[in-house]
Picture 1 (cartoon, rainbow, N blue to C red):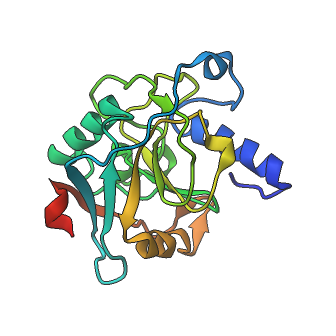
Picture 2 (cartoon, rainbow, N blue to C red):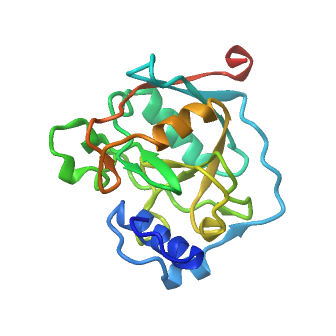
Picture 3 (cartoon, rainbow, N blue to C red):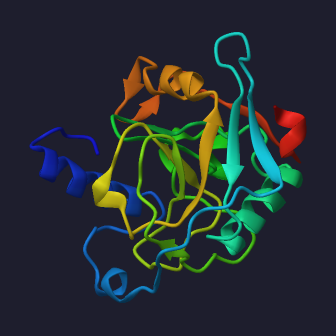
Length: 214
């Protein structure tokens, strides 16, 4: 996702780099074609939502995400677990480009920017939970490596419709409040490639009843 060419080439490059974020290197692999895809199931909002609080709350407001446990129960459970145990406390948005903002790497907490995007939690990887939901603006997806079943802790939020992501990455939620904050983060400068020079960090992710977040 570093080079803007034609629209089609940009999507393919975006896919390749999302894969590379978790150790993969290409966007076309046989496993993707053979992955089971849940079809015709409408997303149902989980009773709990995730609220992302930023360290620099004056510059960036909260982002509220509804979670789709009926679509991706394993990834939703993982996301809640990591939020509650503090894994996401202090992680940065290490990948920002025209397609997504991406975070969730525990290695982005350290002082070595070169390893950002290569890490995961200490828990086992999460198997693919692909569905036919579309990657529209504000969709929350699970980043992974070349193996379909390599999602772990990293996640991304789409900035616009991304048809090239459909059926390739687990969708487990959607931004329902604070998309303006997402767009503010997406426009940060200066950057070293896709990584902001000055880290934009998540203070914590709070899991709360949906009614309490309204």
